[in-house]
Image (cartoon, rainbow, N blue to C red):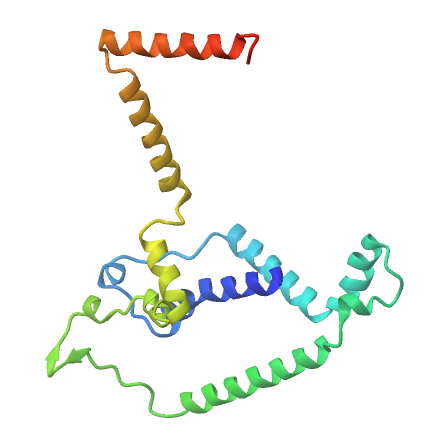
Length: 207
């Protein structure tokens, strides 16, 4: 359940990336300055992590049996960890789908090419930045669902914000201390008398 929940959050985080890559436009300010490629160290580290993700995903039965099963002391084969999913078959289907997609791209490149036209709405041309749709728009369908709408509105009000909750509690305590220490002498004398009465009652033998 934790893995499924983490996968759902990962998918939600990649929605903005997919939107920026395939559906968004480059802002005008970025067109005016060159964009440099990342350093070689960053590229190599990303490639290593990507290859590890692919390797573990494709050959995960070996990882589950050799590493996880051995660490947990489970007997061979560890069917509870491997399950019935055939990773090699799934990988083959994914490669087949990518190959078909690349074939369509190659066929499209043989044509006349793409025709670029300026963005317009209601018959008027719009600036490029006005036509950029933010990726957060994909969350509007989630925030309008009956069950999640109340949670989303509560989150916008800060009801789940621990910082704001702690700030409200500390503010209440500060207000109480400010009320208790107002600088008025009779008020302090009253607190002293009440404290003495509490001490006498607590230390009295009849109590």
